Image 1 (cartoon, rainbow over the protein chains, first blue to last red):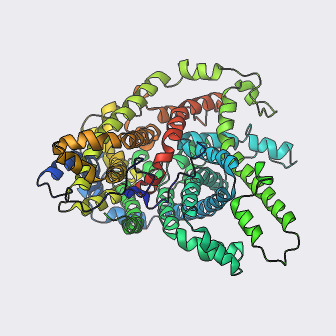
Image 2 (image 1 turned 90 degrees about the horizontal axis):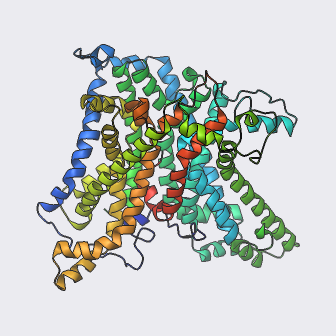
Image 3 (image 1 turned 180 degrees about the vertical axis):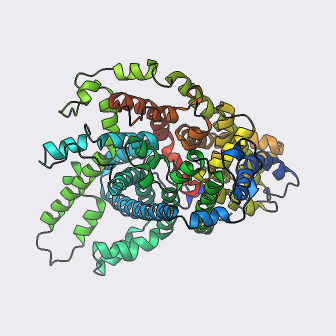
Length: 331
Length: 305
C-alpha cells in the first residue's frame, strides 16, 4: 500500500496505455500495426451483444422517455389507458411551475458549491500529499481511500448520525467542549443547514478522488521548471498558478466536468438525508424531484419532461468531457 | 509527526535556494513542516473519523449510544447489534437481501465483462466504419443519469414482468455498467501490443490461438480489476433497486439498509451503524484491492455512486 499513491498516473493519459493500466513488462503498442485490420464482419459480431444490451436497456427507454414527455401519462395510463399526445403541455407545465424553477435553481447552486469546494479542497490535499514524506503520505492516502470507498448510502447515514439532533456526536462536542448551545439543535430542519450537511457528505466522498488524480498530475510537473521559476523569484503561490496549473490543466478540466455531472444528478445522499429528517418539499434536487413527481405523484408525463431537461443539461456538459477526453486520447 | 524532522523534498529544495534576505530559514522551515504535519493530521482524521464512528457505534449497546456521554471507544463492546440486524425479524430480512445483492452483482459482472470484452476487442483489434462513433457514443451514454431514466426503465421492466426479480435488476445493471466496462477494458487491451500476437502467429499459432495464448493472460489482471469495479457499482446502486425491487424478499442491501430509516418510529442508531458496516465491508475491501489499477480508468470512465 505504501506505493499506492506514487503509482497513480496522470489521470487523463493512462487509458490508452501510457502507464498505470498497462500490464507490467509490456511496451507501448504500435498503433497502426498491420495486424490491426478491417476484419470484415468480425468486429460487428463482437459488438453485437453489447450493442443489443445498450439498445434495449438504454436507447429504447430513452426514446420512450422522450415520447412520454409529450404525453398525458398518469396512473390511468399505467393501468392500460391509451396515453394521449398533448404536445408541449408537460414542458409548459414545468416551465411555468415556480416549484420546478426552485428545484432547478437549488440543484444548480448546490452543485456549483459542491464542485468548487471539492476542487479547492481536493487540490489542496493533492499539494499536501506532494509535500509529505513516505510514511505520513501512506497514512493519509489510506485514510482518503477509506472515505472514497464508503458506499454513498452508508456514508450519508453515518453523517446523519454524526449530525443527529439528540445523540449526535457533533452537538455533544459543540455543547460539552466549546460551551455552545447546540443541545437538541436540528441540523436538517432548516433547508440551508440541510444542504450544508449534504454538501459536507458529498465533498467528503469526492475529495479523495480529486486529490489522488491531481496529485498524480503534480508528480508529472518537472522539478527543473519549478526550480527555474523559483530562481527567477516566483513565490509559492505564483509558482503554483503560473507553472503548475498550466501543466495539470487538462486534468483539472476533466475532473471538474465530472464533478459537475455527478453533483447535478445527485440522488442517494439527498434522498437518504430527507429520510433521516429533512423537509422534502424544500430540499428536493432534480434527481429526487423526478422520483417524487413520477413515482410519488404518478405523473409520468411531467416527470418525463423534467427528466429530459436533466438529460439535456448533462449531455451538454458531457460534450465538453468527451471533447477533452478525445483530445487526450487518440481513438 | 515524522514530517517535523524530515522536511519534504520541496521544502528542502526551497530552503537551499532561498534568497539571503530570509534571516532565519531554519525556524521558518520547521514551522513549515509542523504546519504540513498538522494539515496531514487534519485530513487523516476528517477522512477516517466517520468510518471509525460507524464501526465504533456499531459495537455499543443502543442505550449507551443514546446516553449523555460520548464514548470514543466501544467500551461495553457488544455484538448484539449485529445479531439483531442479521437475525431480527421486525424488518425486511437480511439473508435474502444479502443473497439478492450477491446474485445481482455477480450476474451483472459476469455478463457485462463478457459483453464488454468482446466489444473492447472489436474497437482495439479491428478498424471498421463507425468505430470512433461507437467509442464517442459509449462516452456519452455513460453520462445519461439513471435518475432521469427511472420512469421508462420501470415501465420496461414492468412490461417484461420482471419487477422484484434478480433477473430484471441484473439486466438493468448490465446496461448501466457496460459503457464504463467497455471503456476501461479497451484501455487494457490497447496496452497489449498487437505485435506480440503477430509474432506468435508467425511462430505458427492461429489468430484466435495467438490471442488466447498470448494476449488473454496479460489481460487477466485488468479483467479482474474491471470486474471488481463493476461489482462495486452494482453492490452500491440505490435508485433502480429502490424503484424496481421494493418487496422485502426482493430487496438488495442498500434498499434493505434504507428500511432502518424510519423518521416516525425513531432510529435505532446502534443497529443502523451495524447494518451500514455490513453493507460497506465488501466494498471497502474490494476497493482497497483494486484502486491502484483503476484510478486512471476512473477518470476516463466516470464512475461513481
